[in-house]
Every structure is written in C-alpha cells, then in structure tokens.
Image 1 (tube, rainbow, N blue to C red):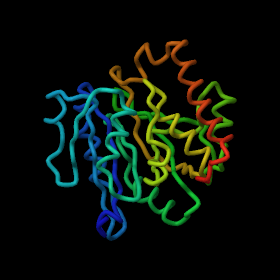
Image 2 (spheres, rainbow, N blue to C red):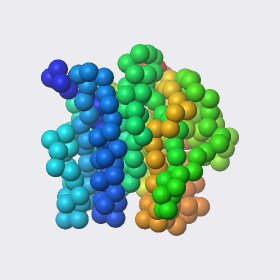
Image 3 (cartoon, one colour):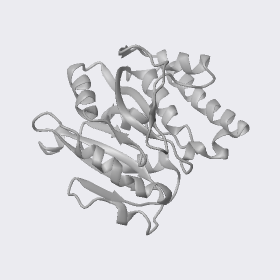
Image 4 (cartoon, one colour):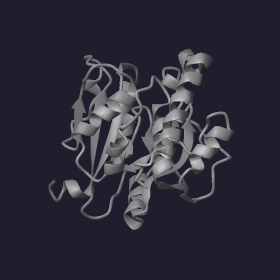
Length: 254
C-alpha cells in the first residue's frame, strides 16, 4: 500500500439507471469536503448492472472511478466496490444523497482519535422533492455508542435503528472482516450496521452529516420494500446473524 493510500477515504456509491442523474449533486457535495493535510478521498461508483445509462453521469475526475457488474442490488454493488478500495476508511454515499460540508473530516477525526471506535454515524436531514429539508427529533445524544446498543433499540422499536446506516463511516479492515453488506434485497445496510454494533463501539454525532433525498424512484419508496412477509424474513435473517455473532466463541473482533 502506498503512502497516499494510507491516507485515503474510499467513498462507495451504488447506483442504477434511475438514480444516475443525482450523481452530479453527490459529486458537488464531495468537492466541498475539506480534509486534513495529506488526506484525500477516492470516489468509487459501482453500477448495479451494466447499462449505458450511468456512465454519462460519472464526473471526469481522476479521484473518481466507475465500475459495472451483474445486477444484485445495492448491497452487492457496494460489496463489489470494496475490490477497488485501498485506504483505511470507507464512507457510504448513496447516489441520490449528499454529504454536508465537513462530514468527512469530522468522521475521520473521530476514528483517528479513538482506536476503540470501529465506525461513526451522524444526523440526517431528509431532502424533499421541493428542495426543502426535514429533520428527525428523536436522535440519540452525541457521543459513543456501546456494543449492542443499536441492536437492542432495533429489537425494541419494530426493527428500526436509532442511527442511520446511510451515514456510516467504517474502518475498512472491520468492514472486510464482516463480509461487507448483507446479500438481501433490502435492509442490507441495516444488517451491516447491526453487525458493526455487535462487534465494535461506534460514535454518533448530532451534527448533520447527510442530505437524504426523498423521491418516488428510491428503493425504500417501492411497495416491495414494505411487503410484510418479505420484511419479516429480512429481519429474521438480520437478527439471526447478530445473535450468531454474539454467541460464537470465535468472536474476537471486539
């Protein structure tokens, strides 16, 4: 690994044709990020499929790489993108979302300053179709998140976590050890969040770190996402994985 790669944040974005037009806004938000001296970001855009619709929207920037592959959903696309990472940290950025100014530097400072933290998350503002934003009034307090805290909240609140997986900033070695994102049609990012919380401490900051776009084409707006039988099956797999990770005697990640 080169000296540059040692001080690189790999930003991973899964994209499909309907969300490709939002890449320009995501790119603008990356370009506003100011990092400590010697650090840089590398944006890895992974198409979920191999169409001709996404490439025209990929910025012409040496810090940006674009890859394609067989369709398998956003979790598969993100996990495949890990093949092109080389830095110590991975930041999630969905194609239709935007980072707030300072988000990367803040997350980097947290994990560089505390070796016991495996990941960080932050507050989210919903970005509505008319350009306005809406916040959430039940975010947790600013500070460390101990092992198991997200899992317990998720179980007690109808499978809803108190922090948002779309804001994750993760140590790359930990992400690889957990196998990346879960191979589920949805909730793959929640599954990763709960696995992270099972084996390592995290951190939540009440500074807004992400504009989460709400639009009719997003995956979570589709009827299939709320199908009761499928949701129950997804949650069963996620919960079973977390329980197995907690029970296994070979769990040494924490």
